[in-house]
Image (cartoon, rainbow, N blue to C red; front, side, top):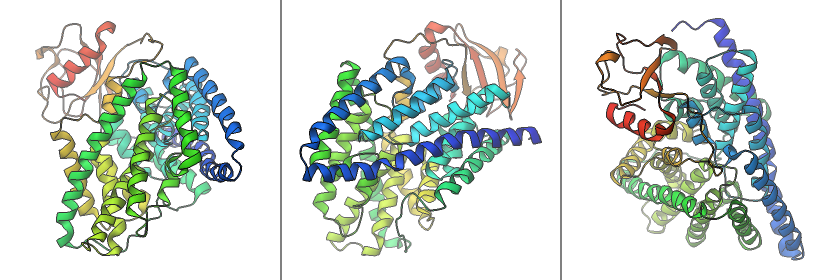
Length: 496
């Protein structure tokens, strides 16, 4: 593995840098939900405030539109943009994106849009770590992005292991020991920093006292199927709304999203924001009809908010939607006396893990994330079963993972000319490239392997170089055929 003290210190520095930005972002966002709830109360008692809210939301739409016009890469969650940079699609102005994303994300949250902090925290962490890394020349640029992403998620949710798994499983696609250790050092450093400000409380205060009895596992399997179907619906509708909104000028998309925000502020404020207001009603004594309405409206507002191209993610809202579905399912089981009330939250967290698995297609990350956010690992078998079933349902319905779909569809609204230099892909298990020399492989026209990252070390590629599973290959490709060549490489050689 050969990790030296300088690299260990570098991981800590980058982790703390990314964590500091994510911590400040998390703290400021935590002030917004109480403000929105108080504002909703004032609107009911003083309807004249609605006019003031309209003016405020109009100003927010104009400011956010200006920020997006100046830097389109801050739109949405930011995860596809980080993946694109990791793949060598373009280079970014890290400081500019950091500042614009931070401001834009706060303004969208202040406007009540149903968007999460996790995607922005991942992008903010990646940009902060990369900026510091450029100034101090600490680590490989791609590794710095990965380290920053993990640290941003770790600080955002107080979930260091989930941050590590998400960065490696979803972003970096590389599990070699050196990268793993450096990412863990950074994520743990960021989480330790976050604990100073937020303590050790979990993100979800669900009281889970009992393990599920074996006779309830048929109900667990049914929940896995249903949550898998809901995940497929969520992915397809998210992309559908995004496609529909692209036909509308950006300022009008934002106006539509903020108009719905004002409407919900006046009549149903529980769907506003990332989802903390909705979580207050995930209880065994809630009305089934109210939870059903909350679930439907939260889904609708999430589609509108993300489809508008505003600044914010889907990570936390999708966990909240999963919890609402789990609550609805558990309440239905209670209605027919199929479970005891003590099992209510068990089915809630199962739905969250399954929903994440069906949408993101990163089941290990989902299981670890739910464990860290709830503080309970008593239902590991059930969590694994639901996640696996939901995953298989989504796969069977040929529904692509949401971030992969967003990356494939990613194009800036200004038709940005991407300065593609290279593309980085990992040799996966079962690839026909394993144990073959580079010169013996029939590569697509215009493709050349320039560098290999193996066990954290760069290997200069030559025709006689033998490829191994887990190698990260850097390809020099023709700029105008980026997407076509990337897809061909992935499908023909089982690269990721």
